[in-house]
Image 1 (cartoon, rainbow, N blue to C red):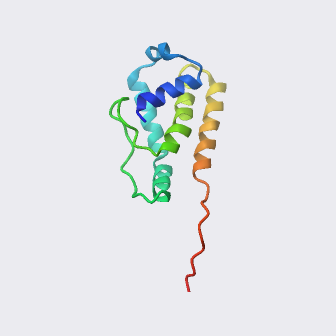
Image 2 (image 1 turned 45 degrees about the vertical axis):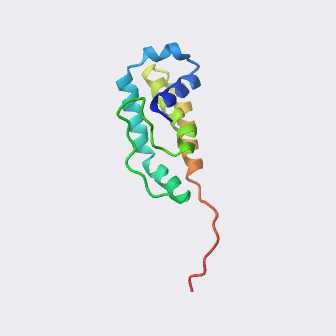
Length: 123
């Protein structure tokens, strides 16, 4: 998923159409996304390890058209809520920002729950 796709998903959550893209500075949105990607790096690595993959490199975007590099569950479930919360703050919509931030935290917590696995005899 590209940074621009996450941005459009966040705008959709805020009830804004594609015309609202021009209301936000691209560099500011990119900085918000990169800050969020830094926050979820450990969660992303946990998801990768659970899927049998190696740890990934640091998540960062050079442009909004680049791929986030995050696991799909994180891209679709958490990143749009985090960006929506940050965008709402720039519009001074603190109640809406708090709501979307709570949804973001809930999604991240849901992705970090323990996984059931068989017990291995260590003796």
